[in-house]
Length: 335
Image 1 (tube, rainbow, N blue to C red):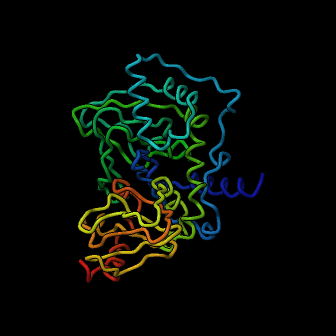
Image 2: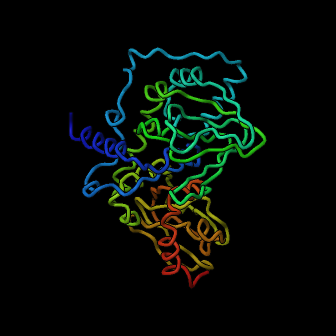
Image 3: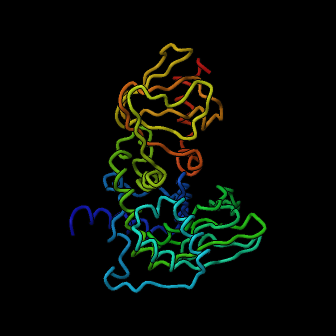
């Protein structure tokens, strides 16, 4: 076993040993609502481990060459609906045509009524769900006897795959909010053999960046929280001179600088410059729900990462005090 496999396996083993795992529920949409996975702080020295996901950490139940695809009969209209929902979720974006067909064939339609629970906190998780029709609320009990509302799932989002990855109990409850809901259920084996690799690749892609991001230093002892953010992270590129946003408008995401610099203009006068790796912006729009006080312009070619607004609640909201302190320290006089 190489070093990378060892570290991934150790990380997976530590998570599986946790008896009070927080959420094993995840959403994957274009806005990457990778919901709701919080673990207790891991034991000392976990900050020295990689938080990337390895196939060995989760265990292969079958090799691809021995895998026998499941086929559940569907009408052409049903297949088209599933395909449309899969296109909305990043988790399925890396699949080729043959893999997509395997996943679509394996999906099973499930119908639920209002106030019915799809999954309950503490249950074993053997399937994930993709929302086709309806809305579902997610609740988490943190041990105080109160079910805390976390978010609402909408069509195109999915939840439940992290319970499959980590072989951990469901750590949140999902209940139907709308009059009814139609979900597509995918089994553990098909997910592990066909879909998991794309999720692994994305997490590994952003691992190095997140390990170095100063804002997340508070989570150095909890690499799992950084892994969760990697699910919600997307990459964008801008050319020198591009206007990212005009003064008075709102961002729909929080941007983090990887390469390049951004100038901030107020009434066509440069008032600030962001050029350090890990500096971020868009928090006025997201945390305060106010229009941005600046025009943002790419001073150089830019490589940015961004977390969509809809993913904020389950990722960076836990650090909202730090985000708002940054606003107060740097932007308050312009608001």
